[in-house]
Length: 117
Image (cartoon, rainbow, N blue to C red; front, side, top):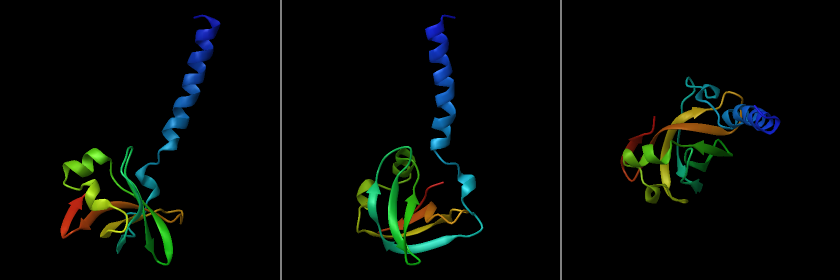
């Protein structure tokens, strides 16, 4: 292998673990501490690798981690249902480390409950 190719291969190999770490796993959430909150959403992002939003809960603004867009839409949850200001009921789990972020298992909006996991 030529020196430029070896350098490129090394750089790629070094970049892969960083990309893998950039996305979190589900083990950082406490499945024993269920959160259920009904409140309006804010800052909704409808995109991949998963949707996101913010919600006020326990006197703080929490980051909300949703499912990938394709999964949400396949199960009947649309972007129109998840707009900022729309009240929803979210059920999920908080992060174990105390960061104000919750992983959502189900969403109830407009009388419809959608399982995300």
